[in-house]
Image: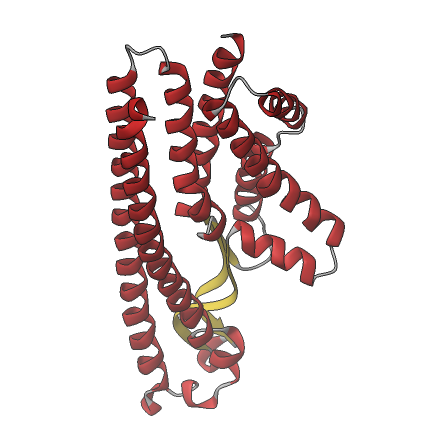
Amino acid sequence: MKDFKLLIVSTFVLLVTVILLSLKISTKLNGYKADKEEIAEVLNFEERILNGSELFSFFGGEDEKLGDWNDLRKSAETKYWSAYGYGAGLLFLVLVYMSLNYFIYQSGVHKNRVSGIIFIFGALSFLFLGLQAPFIEVEAFNDDLSIGASFLSKTFEGRTYHLYQNKSIFGVIQLLFLGGNILVGFCVLLLSIIFPLVKLFASLYVFIKPNTSFAQKSVKIINMLGKWSMADVFIAGVFLAVFSFSNMNVGVDTASKTLIGLYFFLIFVVLSIVSGQFLKLVVKE
């Protein structure tokens, strides 16, 4: 136990700091989502077109809505980039933790075990944010929408929203279950959350106690679950969804982009894969 004192202390410090930063990032991203949803509500199609006060600019309705939109947009951008900054701080913290332990234990007999452990805790540091933070945003809107023709036309300046969606992996799973797609939702839950967690904690046990009979059973479980790994397919599917929505032609402008949640999830996947390589070395030993 004394040989791993630094590893234990640094891991405890990491987990406490990760929890604090994750809560801070989640708060910022929730604020970002709330602002963007309010923008879409303020400038949505029904409110702008059917609201009589905006038909005549001298009532001031249009200027007021555009002012609200501009304030909310600035607020949303500030919160998003603040979350981005905290996310960069989280990444830096994890890299320091992993580098410190890697170089200190590199010359020891347990170097592969320690390397596997630090990559697992590095991956777990991004799991919550990878699942809870928004990973995709889609919009359907018109810029400077004109109604009518000739001198009877009216132009609604700025954007008029028809659709706005901001989803995390948790949000997608919840949407699938609520929409009646229980089988699909269960598959996404199983492949994106349950299987990776089981693999990580089973690997962690092998790294901590590699010479036990349960560790041997854990290796069999990990090998079995490895055949069902769908993380790469999931990420590819996200990008396909983004590109397909961006190129839709439905008479309105469409836009979609990936958000920070996808990058958190991607980091989690990469670190998990690397930890698996150290697991193979420990098994051989």
